[in-house]
Image 1 (cartoon, rainbow, N blue to C red):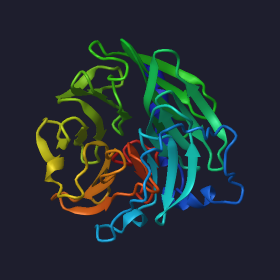
Image 2 (image 1 turned 60 degrees about the vertical axis):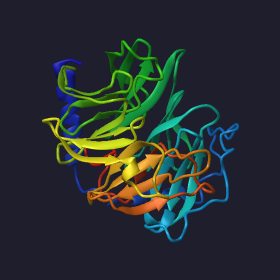
Image 3 (image 1 turned 60 degrees about the horizontal axis):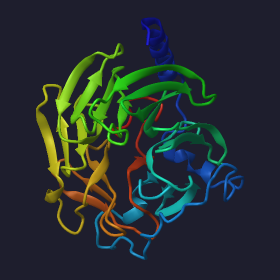
Image 4 (image 1 turned 90 degrees about the horizontal axis):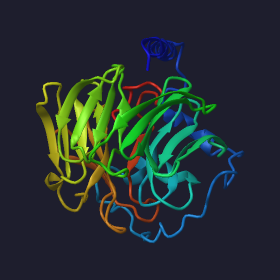
Length: 350
């Protein structure tokens, strides 16, 4: 991206972020849009052919003795790689769903300031409204996979398209589909599926990329020069926190670490430190809440095991969910009661 384009992009983002009073106060205030009378049971582009991906369902729900009030603790968007249904949870119930058809796998999701939802699947990405109208869609071409995307400012978003040997970052208008620019990234030692699951644009105007098979987290500046690198085995996700540190989840090693710019570990959680029966098998997305707690998102094992676990900085479990009647495996959640806006990089630690 040229310096002029980067400058215009940065100015537009600043103008949007600083403009006027922000209503509603949190994204949870938008939930009535999803339960309104005009919301159909099935949207025009919704694909209810979900195949065999719900074979794990059971009557198991969270034990009332478990900490954190079960599903009623947070309003949230909930998605997983073992099934293809987007769920909106509020007051302990699934109040809205959107089926995305057979195949693999839901990976990233954001609720926007107008209530629209931007999400990625392995084979496509799309934007849908609360009343289930599809606004934008990108279908992967042969040899491509799509696991991550992020809104930036009022109209823009980027997605990382995996493809061997070179993936590409695509900046586009999520209302019109217009592509503003693309940038190629090399993954010399990776299969398409093993390239990356997460990339994030930070509030510092940099790019943070988790290379799974390349075993590193890399931060690029606006000109795609490497300005920071942290080597670790198979990082699934990395997010820049408000304190300037980076929170990294390593699915294979069953570990979450927080490292500073000097690459020093300032916080670490081995999943074996979580007491049974809350202990998840593996975690993918991790979410750092405004209060300093961390939520782990776990796939579970064929209909058993905790899907969501929230721990304090001193590693005490304050919330755990094991609900295979209403939910499936979880790749990612967006907690809608947290302050901030999806379009404003840095507002959420996810």
